[in-house]
Amino acid sequence: MYARLGEIISLDGSIAVTLAAHQAIGLKGILIAGSDAQKEKYLPKLASGEHIAAFCLTEPGSGSDAASIQTRATLSEDGKHYLLNGSKIWISNGGLADIMTVFARTEVEVDGVKKDKISAFIVERAFGGVTSGKPEDKLGIRGSNTCEVSYDNVPVPVENVIGEVGGGFKIAMNILNSGRFSMGSSSAGMIKKLIELTSEYAATRKQFNKRLSEFGLIQEKFALMALNAFVMESMAYLTAGMMDRPGLPDCSVEAAMVKVFSSEGGWICVSEALQVLGGLGYTKNYPFERYVRDCRILPIFEGTNEILRMYIALTGMQYAGKILTEKIKEMKKGNIGLALAMMGKKLRVSMGGSVDLGLTGKEGVVHPSLTDSAKMLEENVHLFGTTVESLLYRFGKSIVDEQLILKKVADVLINMYAMTAVLSRSSRSICIGLRNHDHEVLLTNTFCSEAFFKNNYMMVQLQKHSPENNDANIKKIGAQVLDSRAYVCSHPLERTF
Image (cartoon, rainbow, N blue to C red):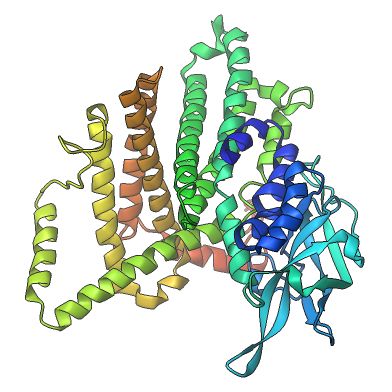
């Protein structure tokens, strides 16, 4: 339901951010980790809109490194409340919020040793000592309230600790992980509106005695927007469906993949939509320049895409590493059968044997009209498995420092999840007879074909001594520029003789 709401309100980025700061992260800590008493006390007014919520984590010295926050909560001598001191920056709804989820360092005892650990607190503005700075003058989402919030000896009752004392970092990550998925539906909603606005112009504007809509390069832009909206929507609602299952399923990796794909796809699409209108799109008479400004925040907030790519890759490889470790242990024990099975499997595929993961055929879960695309996904999945194995053999634990490699691993994973989402959606649409399902099939086959070849190229780059891999040169160029703090090359007119 929240995904659907995000899709509707995304027509105005400021409204979308204000609601997301309240609903997706502001009150989420109480919802997923709060006590029954906390939920009973705070959620009714937060749900009705009588109270506005904010999520307060980022500080001047801690952005992506959330564990380095310095705001501190000190337990009072009578043990009845904590005194909260510090400041938070870039807080959405910071000047409006009545209720804030605030993260601060607390002293806890672990095995008889006192340590600093992060705890989560429900802080009411009415407690006193809470001050908000002036709203930030931002590039985009200018209608939303973003400001610094300071805490000066704010008395927070001990019963307002969310979860356990010292368990705040995990709560913060769970809140952020669970909220990211809605960026897919929000971005898709925005792109669908942009398609409506720009297609009307393209169908009526004439140049060279032809409508813009008749030119191939203009048609390409609309195809790009439609593909992105379709994939974002499919990923978002597949993830939302998984999150709606009973219990608290961990969909953090899937949500991160939705966020990365949608934020970058959204940025490309708003730029292409503006390009269709040319100079008109660049003026404030039309909403396109606002969409461009609003969209620039998407790859930055709720976890930068750089950090999320590392999270996606390393979380997946951690699981693969455990499986690989077990296989190695079995072979060391003398399990020759396992070793021969692994060698036989690789030999069959290397000699042209087909990969069959059960997506197609009589028992397959994908509709026959999507067989070719499903086969592409199966081949990508198999090659990805062997690629990850070779990377783990090659780098071991030091893989955590190979960021350019991890970026490619994450991008392949994101593409494969997107392929899975569109194949699933299109198969369902055909089976239940949704209108225009033939268009969904066209979109799915087009996207899967493009993703398949992109994935193959990235996985070739991940092979040892691959001539296609320029990572070493990229790092060398970057290091030289950063060491010089400037562009290194001489100006072409420096010597004119």
